[in-house]
Length: 100
Image (cartoon, rainbow, N blue to C red; front, side, top):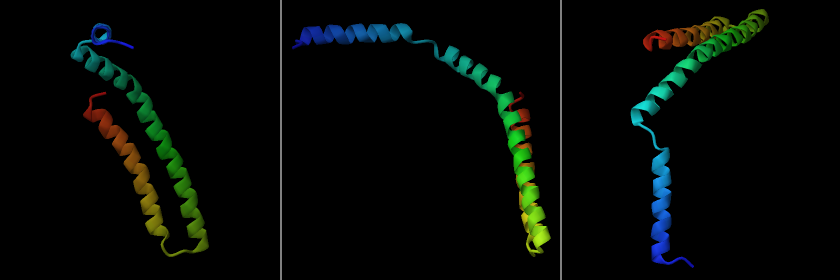
């Protein structure tokens, strides 16, 4: 069983150890910024790839509707085309907004 003195000593040692691992807040934010900038290019490329896949799936879906003679083919085509454009525009705007 620990008495009060031993408990306070243990808590003090833990606090000293934790404070030894602490770093400057500005250094942490700068490191996070550097890491995010490193992954941003890959993220934009991924967005473009997702846009391409969505475009291909949408083209196939619109083609099937068109061949079936369904009346809402134009609406579906506009929706798929709009989603592809949205993905490309969002990636480009974020890239230019943050200056990356």
